Image: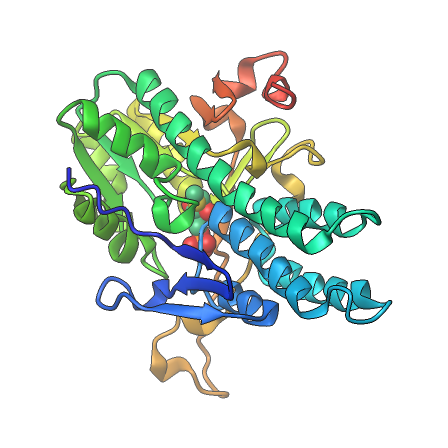
Length: 344
Ligand code: MRU
């Protein structure tokens, strides 16, 4: 393996460099941000994607706000909270965003600390701990899978979507390091995270992969080529219901029909303990123009589009939930559910 793992986020003394994922795979371009508003905009406009990466970027965004406002006037906190609100409104579904902002808010509320230094250390720790968690999940997930003939993944969950290495893609990397396995990636319409990011990342790492149209997944399963589907998550409710990229739910339903197993891989920062189940997870609806061909973009067009970008897979369809704190097999059948991960 060539091990050229690309970084989505690079923190520097004077700001945050964000790899503009909209330009991949043809152009590798980093945009440098010195203000939190720019980071909020980068999240909202999909320059940076993936639940853990969004959380990390937001944490650094708060540090940039503090660099601008901390101690400048007695009311510096109001200016920082306004920037935090902007970051919180950048995207609704990935809970890592709110988890990271809550951590930063707890530091800002402290009176007797150097808040800027503490917040910077916290953001860097969030970033580094995510990398460590990914490596751990990679090993745990690969153990659960054991021998595999083929794996299918959906969306992007690699280095670009995380602090580095990846969640579901981290497990795939770890499986590929142990054995020869066929790896399939869904295209992932409409933003094509699979086609533009996942297979590109794997190729960068020297791992061969086969791209399929999203609608080919059932037929792939029917062919017997895969035994596991491995996906990441944007928000997991306390009972294991999992919000992830639109199309994940269909894959889980298809997996049941074909005797294929379904694995969700996510750090515990993706678990929303305040939610009993997935019903209350806010699903981001993006603009119809992302789906509609140009010729329908007219005010009198009779053609509209419905563009939810996440869906919720019930825990009953999930065979394994892999976190950095351990694995829960068949989470819906365990009396204690995933609660044991909370303080593990
Ligand atoms: O809209 P995106 O590209 O931010 O969606 C990303 C996903 O749905 C990922 O599968 C999820 O965030 C897990 S990333 C490790």
